[in-house]
Amino acid sequence: MAEEPGAGGIKNGRCFAEAANHTSPPLFQNGELVFQAHHVGWLISGFFASVAVVTSFWLIDQHLQWYTNKAQQRQIVRLLLMVPIYAFVSLLSYIYWNHATAIVLMRDCYESFVLYSFFYLLLLYVSDDPMEQREVFKNYKLDKWMFPLGFVKYRPEDGLYFLQLMKWGVLQYSVLRPLCTLASVGLNYVGLYCELSYSPAWGHIYLVSIISISVSIAMYCLFQLYFAIKTELAPQKPLLKLFSIKAVVFLTFWQATFLGVLASFGFIKDTKYMTAEDINIGIGAILETFEMMLFAFLHVKAFTYKPYKDLAPDGKRTPRLRGLRHAFWYRDMWKEFKDGCIYLWRRMRGKEAEKLMRKQIHLENAMGRSRRMDRGPGGGIRPQPTRPKEGMPGERPELPWLNVENDGLEAEVGLELEKRGMGNRAGILVEKSI
Image (cartoon, rainbow, N blue to C red):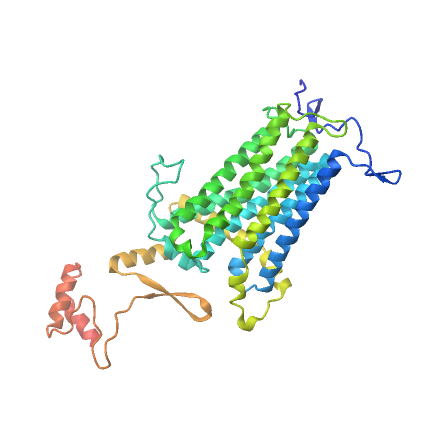
């Protein structure tokens, strides 16, 4: 196999990262500081990363101290951890550039959890209860898909199915991304990955293509969900939150791809102590740590802890460790994945997937009125039929279709039952009601 420019060392059908011709000299030589270009890069990147990590951990600590809305803050803490992870791993990949591929791939694995957490945070802003969330979506009808899929004529049959499609659009990335990461690390170890080559002979082009399609679908579903419930989300001002998450994912992925293309076409040259691939890693690390510092400041505004502090009873703080344990117990994600699999399996077999909610919808359509969601004991949701307004004490309640003020109650009931195709059973009903 011929050697490709910028593709690293290719020998015997294997592609491994090519080391520089000379080993980098130590920072201290004969008692003096001797700076090389990458040492300066380490200091700059280290400063940016330190600011990002300290700022993000401070904000996480505030949320853990005022952990008053477990459902929402669980997802927020997971989102906030993204910045220190990205900043630290970017710096680490710069210092240990010979192992950067494996280090960065493991970092990118967390990206899938970020999109999942933000998707469910949007749903939790609508309501903390799944039944109330379904109540919002049950009558939703998609008029048109968001750009660039506006030409697609297929529409989900109802809002519940739309919600499940959007969930799976995000969950598929949470599954595919870790699998692609494991495949990338394995292929890189045996020399079949070849990160700086886009030749079909190596695994890099295929895995990058899969990840690109998968993350694009996940981001599209995230935006499609936002536009469906933007009215309900308006009090939460979600646009800043949406930008602060999307921009991190977008910049890190496409920035790394762009730098990889530059290196593969020879725009980045080898130096005495660093190969073009090593320089590419260093440039990416400096850019990413700087961006993470900016996003850490942005998150202080976008994911403020102050509304949750106001909910604390008597201003009492919550134990940090308890909140941390709750935030990073990922059972909720696996439950959603399991429920999603069951839902799709039932639909493929032609069975009713949302039986309870659809029964409620059919009942409401038949009765011509909706059921409101009332809070039961313990904060749970208890669906109750909308009852007629009560009059003054001693008065009959006003019924919507029975004119009880008339003396001919039996005739009124019989006429209404005839209209509904139930036959004239007025006598029986009136007798029972009496």
